[in-house]
Length: 190
Image (cartoon, rainbow, N blue to C red; front, top):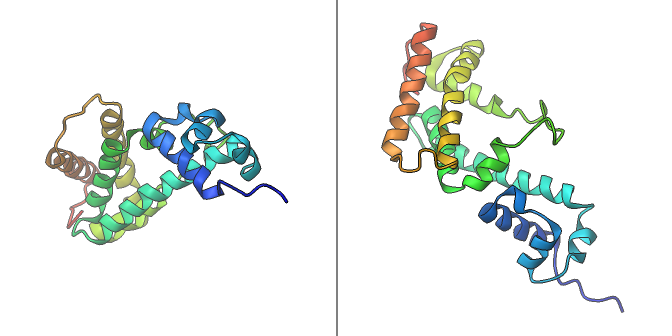
């Protein structure tokens, strides 16, 4: 009779996710995940083709985490675009290692450059909430969200660790207003 399976794919993935969440992407290796599980490295390589697959699954989980936060906050807000930006900033503050994994990794070296540009969901939100066409929404997004990204990097790396949520929200609103002013677009609601 073969030995009983002690760890499931989900258990290994949860252990890897917890490890990265706590210690960062560089901590992800088979021995560290095995330690997290309280077992050996064997289940990892039985359940995953290798550490690269496990790494990609951790990225997928982190991406689902932030996307779900953004969708929920945007759906329940009078200012969906601001809510999305705030979700992004709060994710950087509350989950700095997952933020770094998703948004501060070398996309060229890991082979995902150009394939993971998922900001398209931001364009329709701007179109609807600000009241502009898609082309203008893209221009507004490029001029405001990338400012938000820079602020999020400062927050995740503790360059600006003590910023209040109110201040974050003011900066997001100001960046969108500045972008709209630059493009000559009156904002109705953001």
